[in-house]
Length: 211
Image 1 (cartoon, rainbow, N blue to C red):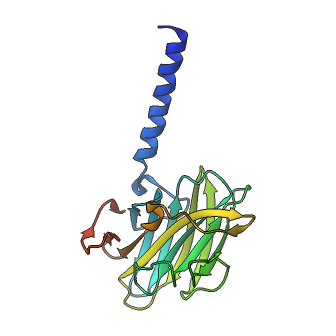
Image 2 (cartoon, rainbow, N blue to C red; image 1 turned 45 degrees about the horizontal axis):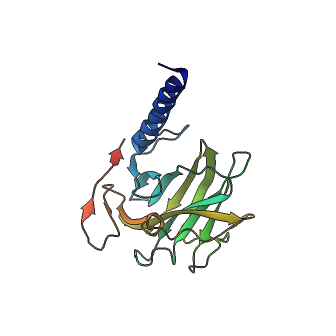
Image 3 (tube, one colour; image 1 turned 180 degrees about the vertical axis):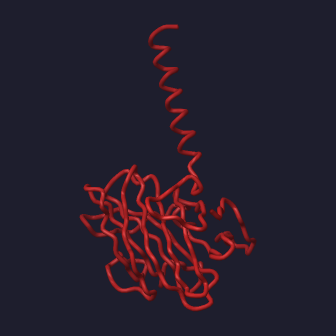
């Protein structure tokens, strides 16, 4: 076998391994230093994952939201809950946790209440008690950690996740591609099942893990 053909075969083999490794990533094989969550879910859009532990009696919700494929510090990432419990529109009224990657690996993490579609995700108070908000940026993945306190008796919620470009340090409007438009669902915190925004009420239990 010629040297050029050998290099081609080796290159294809390496690429194949990378693709297999990437496609094999699920929330079940993700771990966090000094943090363990009871349940996790592979979200259906934007290569994102949600890990959570929820105590319904106290309303205490501990989350880790991971968004892969963030190859630049010129993008923002956000995960949000919409207390209006509507998927249409899911963004207006959403209470967001935002992370902006920094070159030193320590993203700026803050909260933002979304009041319009033209939001630039201004920092401010949200309608849920919030503690322990932090974020990491490693291996092209942004992870947001936080603990929120939900209203008594909450068993499900509408959540939204997004990423978008920055202008300087200011978040700009996200893409309107299908993957961004559909990055929302109704999540049952107790069972891990979800309802997708597909125009029907069929429940899906895909890629849910209780650890």
